[in-house]
Amino acid sequence: MAIPFTVSKSEEAYALAMSPSKAMAGCGADYTLRVQKVDEKTLKGNFRDGREYVLSRQ
Image 1 (cartoon, rainbow, N blue to C red):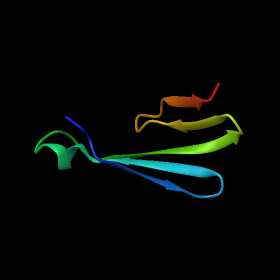
Image 2: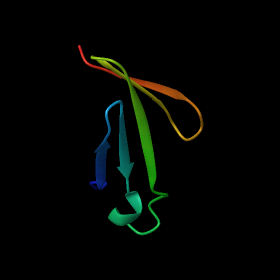
Image 3: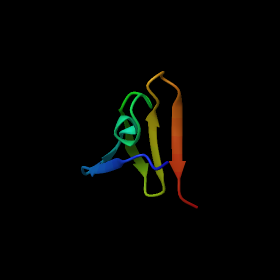
């Protein structure tokens, strides 16, 4: 099952909006992950529960 999502971008941040409720009724709450640009290869953000995540390009 594919989950629809959209990506928004500003100068220093990205927002990944995921919509599992649009894929299947009762599938879960929609949410948005926001990431801030740390440097040219690294983005950093937090999950809804506060856990940190890092996306890095090699």
